[in-house]
Amino acid sequence: MEKEAKIYVAGGQSLIGAAILRELESQGYGHLLGKYTEGLDLTDPSQVDAYFATTKPEYVFLAAGKSGGIRANQKYPAELMRDNLLSECHVIHSAYQQGVKKLLYLASSCSYPKLCLQPMKEEYLMAGHLEPSNEAYATAKIAGIKLCQAYRRQYGVNFICAIPANAFGPGDDFSEEDSHVIPGLIRRMHEAKQKEDSSFLIWGTGAPRREFIFSRDLAEACILVMKKYEEVEPINLGLGSDISIAELAGLVKEIIGFPGEISFDPSKPDGMPVKLLDSRKLQALNWEPRTPFKSALAATYQWFLQSEEKQDRGPRVEEKIRQTGRN
Ligand SMILES: NC(=O)c1ccc[n+]([C@@H]2O[C@H](COP(=O)([O-])OP(=O)(O)OC[C@H]3O[C@@H](n4cnc5c(N)ncnc54)[C@H](OP(=O)(O)O)[C@@H]3O)[C@@H](O)[C@H]2O)c1
Image (cartoon, rainbow, N blue to C red):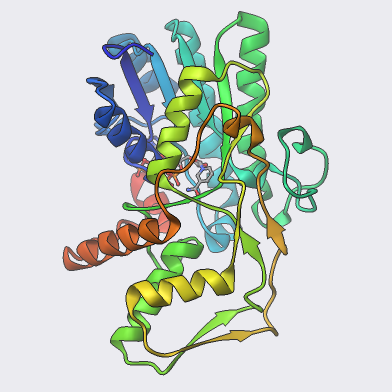
């Protein structure tokens, strides 16, 4: 990927997309598109066609599409599925039509079967039933992988797919309704500290283990994969190591300086005991995370504090679905 190449990051305001843009900038790429949406609706084929025809990007990172927590997945499965299907369909087709040199599509680890063998190898995709609560979203993400593969097969284009672990970092969604594990813990524990609560309750036993990747490290991995990965099969983007929810909560407590006790409610469900990607293909490209996990958590907390000051926690997914009128 030449330094003067024209690079479009679809979803450039997303947690991951914004981190990719920042990382590209810091690596000296100067011709970047996607920082501002300019009202571009990726579910509208005529808008996507016109955007590609006018801007003519040479490389595309496809990091757009709606996602949400359990609540959004249960309440809006149709919107989540439709928005993702349409966006990936139109971006991939326009990229093909405009002769994009290479496209990286970001799928999701919920594309793996609910009862997947651990660690999850790329070859386990579609080897079992999906988790029912996010089946609609996960199906759309799998369709994106299959679409890239179909375009490769029929048109010989260099479109590749990656499956990131749970990302977190500055710009994350800290809202009560849609936040994922880390931003949710940070917000709730920060509020508990402010209220001077003596204890902090976490659902489940705290034993489940999860894999998290800092958005900046993930952005580096995405750029590396764009430069070096050429295979038809997707590539997992994870650290290859995980942490228990109890250990994570302990670290967040230290960073926030919450003086109370952390307790667990084992009557609440734990979910999968382990969810870990097998990222040996990524390691074989000589990638390793640059940011120590605790520093990454601290940077995320700092961003949260600053955004609290600005009273800007970012619009919630449910609000976005209502407001954008895209659906
Ligand atoms: N976050 C994770 O842990 C994670 C893990 C694995 C995979 N992924 C995948 O990685 C990608 C990026 O994830 P993320 O968490 O960084 O995303 P995100 O923060 O939820 O943001 C999604 C982005 O897509 C844009 N978008 C959604 N619908 C659009 C439409 N119709 N037209 C134009 N733009 C649209 C949003 O723009 P607006 O804000 O303007 O709506 C936003 O910039 C997604 O495809 C997701 O499935 C994420």
